[in-house]
Image (tube, rainbow, N blue to C red):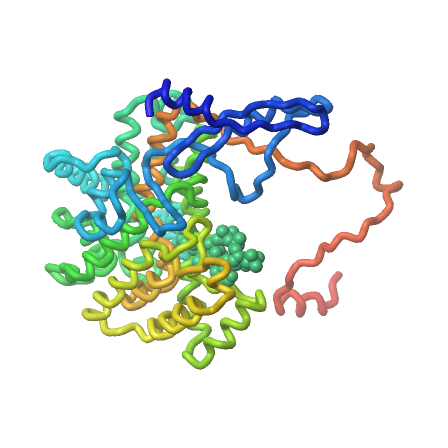
Length: 470
Ligand code: CMC
């Protein structure tokens, strides 16, 4: 829609609001979009009362649009997901992760030569600084791979002070070459950082990237190569992981992607922003859900325990992990594809026994009024964990396998954010309900308020507290 048509449309549709505190009436234009119509929250500020503008209260951003984006489209009721307009099902069938990353970040599918150049640039950046590799080796033997990945990404920011806005000046990301370079570096090095975190965990030396393998193949190679002269991952396993990478690459403003924009709005460097977003993804309600699903399936352990588990969920003692979504109120289109991949993987690896529990759980949940009424369907994480398990990944690697591809989406949003004329530092408002102004009271004059100050104690600490101290 051109600007004039948009303006005419805005004039045609508006909200008339009368503030019964003051009797003032305002007309707020309604903007239309493919996803949903909306009003600008700042327009409500015209409704003033006692010198204060009217604001909207929306914890958890349940109904708030905070940016304009062209990257992905979701219709949660119909179960539709498109990257730059292309249905996820087509991309999963026909594309590669590297091509999808190009599409997300640059807006169009690449030509043959553009794809080749892009692929080469990413390959060149698979090597990480030996200091970063050395630093990773200093983590504890049982450090969670996400903890290693997040810390390493943040640490790599210190390797590039010349492109850090805090040091090189705010305008540094106005230079397109510099922006592209950080994209190549981050996307290229992610599989290396991720595989290093895995190698630490299994007590093996880090592998160097292979010079002649695709993005996903090289990742599997770095994870698994031991002393073989030639090591080539199984092509069907490579393709299965490739499709999982495509499915996880982007999902508009989920918790972590919103955080990339949030952090970027402060002007922080992109390495720190990506590390912060990875931190958001790590949580069990977001990218850590696949890990939580596996732990849940293991806890259920047997088909006979499912009815009790479902009862516990309905009694709100537990969550059915891998079910429900803020946006999808239908079957997550990614979950359908993931379920198919599971069987393709089992053909090579053998069946993962937990799949039986997952399928039965889904069957029962989808026919139970509790889940039907709340429109709770399996999301992308419900079956992905079972595949990762069948592929031999330890459970704590699951969120890492989500993070690698999602970085493509994060970088697409970062680039879009940098070019967005409406971008501004994110600074929400609060509903203050604390004490009114009061004076400081000296410690001698204070009355004691009951405040809970206990913290948990180890058995060792309890034993120490029985000792005679002097
Ligand atoms: N198990 C049981 N009940 C649930 C679940 C669940 N997994 N999810 C939502 N509900 C209930 C919830 O208790 C509420 O019930 P009521 O209306 O009676 O209070 C109702 O369904 C609506 O839920 P909500 O909490 O308002 O929904 P939300 O949009 O705030 O939460 C969610 C979305 C993904 C955080 C939530 O569904 C959840 O915690 N799911 C399990 C974790 C999970 O699988 N996360 C992965 C999400 S997909 C990957 C990604 O994008 O990161």
